[in-house]
Image (cartoon, rainbow, N blue to C red; front, side, top):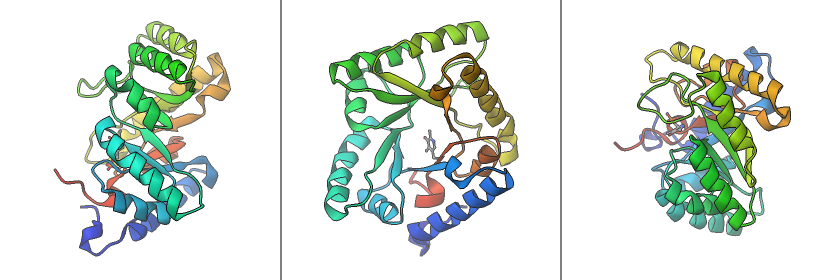
Length: 248
Ligand SMILES: *Cc1c(COP(=O)(O)O)cnc(C)c1O
């Protein structure tokens, strides 16, 4: 059971523990501390708790639903802008995006981590161009071919590469790397092959296309981030270990 802020543990204390674990994982992997960024996944979390995390030093947040985000993000941008002169917050969309919400998503988010089809990328490209924007995205890969998950299939490889090339050619959409969701397992170690496969896929793509486009590897959540860091994650997406268990 993860600690909950409501059990007398504060978000700042949770964050402290997560940061220690991240630092240990980074060190034992022989990586540099600056190599791994923490995105706090604040879905279902009310704005005051998000502000608490911001004050504890978190500047990147993730949400998974456009409707929820459209209520929270503008309010938080305003509050953060008013209450501090500190760094601005970056918002990541980490959940499946329906194409009809692409326009709203581009207006709200700084990064879209969950680009899971060519058609979605094409819609984002059109909307980004219409708004004179260039939106950073990650390609979500369904490494384990889990029917419950969305994402590109990396095999057959030639079909996947055709899809990647189509996305890379789209104006207004800047591919920065890959994202995956690990399998739901009882032991975090069981997620290692998935993370390793995503890392190898990134190396393959970076060797083949512009390497600068493939720097990000978003993988690892509350239960499995140390393993993801060991396998090369540059972004980890942590919700419950910071904010406590979500309501069901
Ligand atoms: C909810 C969510 C997370 C965070 O999961 P926790 O188990 O709360 O750390 C990370 N990534 C995605 C895509 C999510 O939907």
